[in-house]
Image 1 (cartoon, rainbow, N blue to C red):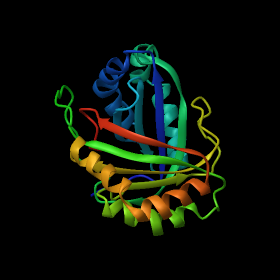
Image 2: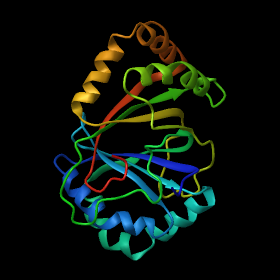
Image 3: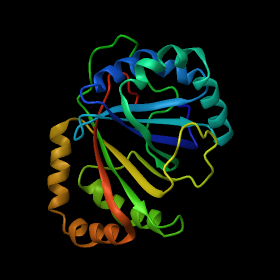
Image 4: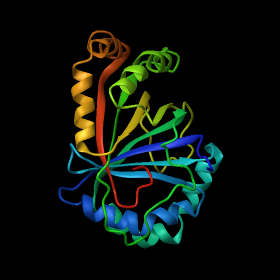
Length: 241
C-alpha cells in the first residue's frame, strides 16, 4: 500500500445550525478529488456525533513544502473558485486547525490507494471513529512516551487500539491564509464497527482500574486543559471508516 503523509492537518469547523449536510454534500461531491489532484491526501471527513454543527476532517501532505504548494494551488484554482461560496456559506468558524505529524499509523489508517466510495454514493458507514486531543505543555514533556507505554495498552485491551497517533508538528504555518492553533497536542483515533462496539469500549474503560486509577489521572496531570474527546461518523466518501 502507498503511504502518506509526514504532515497532517486536523480541521474542525463550526457551522451554521442545520448546515452540516450541505457542506458535506459540497465536500464529498466536489472537493475531495479537487484537493487530491494537487497532491494532498483527503484521509477522512466526519460528522461529530456529539456536536451537530461540527464537521471534522483530516488531510495529509508528503512534507511541509508540498503542503504550501498544494494549498496554494487548490485555493487559487478553479475547483475552489467554483465551490467556495457554497462551502463558506455553511461556516461560522474554520480556524480550529492543528498541524500534526504521525507518531504511529496502524494498518487501519488509510493509505493513498485505500478504497473510497465513488461520487454519488449514498450509503453512510455505520462505523465510529473516536479518540481524543490532549493539550500539552511543551513538545519535550514526555507525553508521547507516556501515552505509548501506558495508555495504548489499556485502550487496546478495552477495544480501542489506536489506528493513528499524532503529535504537533512544531513549524511555522507555511500557508497563512488558513490559520493554525498555536498549541502542542497529542491526538489519537481508533475505529469501531458500530455504536455498540464503541459503547462497549467506553463501558470497559470506565471499569478499568488501570485506566481510572493510573493512566487517566496522569494524562490529566500532564495536560494544560481538559482533553477534547471525539466521537465521529464517517461521511459516505471518507476513506477513514
